[in-house]
Length: 556
Image 1 (cartoon, rainbow, N blue to C red):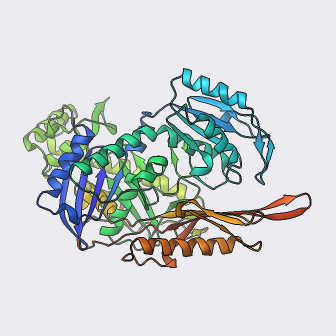
Image 2: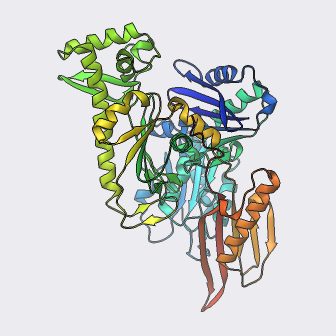
Image 3: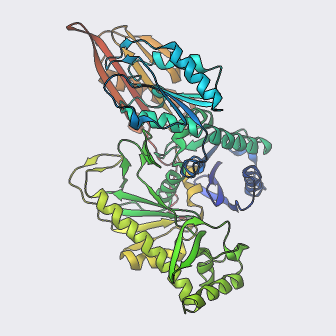
């Protein structure tokens, strides 16, 4: 059995899948509950009557890191940045305290100017005075020589709770993005660690020892312990689960729009020729451009629990949300109240929903039904306007998908796929607004948990080679081997793929992974030159099992 768990901003959704079928499902609201209590309650209801020893794997998704960044509920971070000569530092400041260090590494990975140890000591003192417990260390070209970052980290280790090094985040050379990604990784560390600890405690109390994985922004997974060290990879984990759930439950041919309308936000995705758009360099969250690989998605503050108000005779919905809808004991109206009043959903007190719609309608000289329909119509307009603006932006530049780059392609959606609690209620409105057929699956309300539960394991490895010194290193597989001087980038890619296939099939031969299931996510190679002579190459390759689904559930 597999468990899929989606921890959103409004609800926890959970499912059990056995032999490719959903055998139980639970939705638990988070209103007024501690997260641990909510998870325990969800698992109690989900697992009642089932043999826990049969659970082989737990996959989860969460919006917890994304929400922490957007709400600025993150830890203070001290930044140590060595940018080298010629690069303005003003735009790189991103932490609560920033120190720009002397010293530099050139593009060939050679240290051209040493560190100043006194600067590190001064930074430590300032960070401690400011009660900063998390740091990030980023040096330019550290991907070609991480020794300086490692040395700085060694000096910081005894003073701080968590330290991110830039070279461990990504092998790509975009220095500003690596700075911001490292900052966010340290900023959300405590938030994610607290969440991960609660998840582990919840399953331990249930007597479940199955491995736990979390979805990454690209739709792949990573184990929970690895995620503790790179929590930034879990940003947009929730939208990734949305996409994987829609892919499992609905057809994905041609060009289309995918919508996940939840209690707090609406996530928008686009498919081109059946393949999702992809963030080519990395996602942007808040004001920070990162190196986190991600399916392209945009969130807007619009959902079933969005705050509704009337200002100067005009209806406004979102982006803030109410604690709970009026029909479920809240104090103010929400779109959920409108849907319930119109008989489009059943979860709540119908009489309270009718009362609040009638009350709002009187302020605009409308009946309760007309008020409820206006709310849904306004939601449709907000979604349509955002889709139109996104399509205009997407079609103004090359289209990047998971599979390829399409330079002259114009995205022209042929239909809409929609999931989330309000999906059924809004389908007809969106069809009318966008002039496209709108599909939703039977299990539209728990699709995120389906996507989480069915996501494949996507173990990745990093191969680093130095042909001058004649060795390769793969830390994840504990490999350190000698190589010959003619070793090339192509040979490195082939070896990384072969080793990853063999390793995964040894771990679980039921997966039957082949080379076709592996993708190279990062690759770089540069010549090391001494004087006028090339002395070898520095090579870096990252290989990963392609994100995908264990099963599809189209019958659901």
